[in-house]
Amino acid sequence: MKAIYSFPLSVIVGLVVSTNTTNAQTLDLASCMKMADTANLQVRNAQLDIEFNEKQRGAYLSARLPQLNFIADYKYNAKIQGQVIPAEFFGGPAGTFSTVQFGVPIVLSNTVQLTQVLFNSQVNYGLAALAVNSEIVETQKQMTLQDVRYQVANTYFLIQGIIKQLEFIDSNIVNTKALIKNMESMVQQGLVIQTEADKLKINELTLANTKASLLATKEQLESLMKIYIGYPKDVNISFKADKLVENSILVDQSETNFLALKMIDSQKKMNEEEKKGIKMGYLPNLSFYAAYNYNVNIKPEDNFRKGIDGAFLGLRLDWNLFDGLEKYHKAKMNALNKEKIDNQYELLNQQLEMAVDNNRKQIEVKAGALSITKEQLQLAESIHKNAVLKFKQGMSSSNDLILAENGLQQAQTNVVATYIQLRQAELEYLKSIGNIK
Image 1 (cartoon, one colour):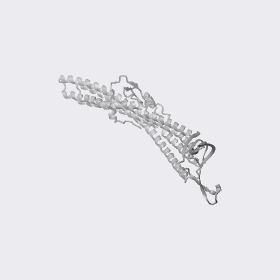
Image 2 (cartoon, one colour):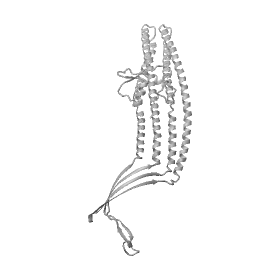
Image 3 (cartoon, helix red, strand yellow):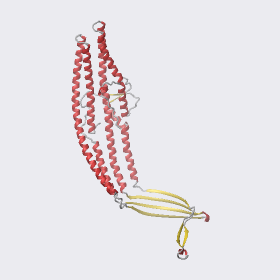
């Protein structure tokens, strides 16, 4: 089940990282994915599906082996059934009949029977279908791996956004505190009124409140990552910092692996095997059987006991000569399903080509946007630096300083938001070509 948390960027970029990382293991993206490949429960279930299919194949193969059965039967004839036969058979008058009882009150029957299937078209079809199904479950596992890696990477980059925003928040808090201290000194000297200092204190409280209120969301993301990678929930975890660079995870773009198309290819094979199975259904089934039987007949009142054994070999041919056109209609349904699968393949192929092209373009757009927002951040830092200098020199008001600070914080937010958008665009592209590694 897909469980990707989607948080608004305005919230994500305001998140902070806890400073309590004592004994925390520092993980990079590759380590997280490697852990998820083996410990994630979705991946493990996909592997169990593969093993389950192998066991099913073994069960079908056992149908080709000889079957040996033992049957024991105890029968007490409270009243032995009679049989009417002509009396003249015993020398009686013609045209009359007599009732004769055959058998004894107690019969113990023991039979050992061996059966060997020589030819069964449905067993052969079942094995062929399981061979195709092994391809399907393997493809499903690869699709699950891609989904899990996407979830892990997406969560990883959301946390990276938090780490980067933390650096900005901490820096802003330090600068704001320094300005407040300077402002309070000016208030004491009577150079400015207390209201000017209070304006800066509001900014400081806003930063502190943002840090405190979003800490729970950061912990939620870390808890989610622990579930994805099978990490102990009671152990601290930290992540290696990523860089604010373009195209950081697009290593090998030459390898494409359209898993959805592979799945439809397997469905085509299954459809073909089903067609063969329908045709094979017109053939007879042939089996060999042998049995040994030993009966003990007992008549207690006469103290009669007699054992009689018997054995036989045989061939059995089962041939359905007319099934009410059932296989005929199944063949028609199979043909319609084949046409449907072909249409699905063509449609999906077109959609995948469009998705790959669009995702590639999105990477270019977001990479350009990140470059622009980084440049904007440099300009905002320069403007803020000049605003602080002018304020200290008494050449501007606190309103101008606060305006510059807000502009700086917005530029910082834009950089982090665009960084996350770029990484998500890269992930979407890699997922569309089935190449998240």
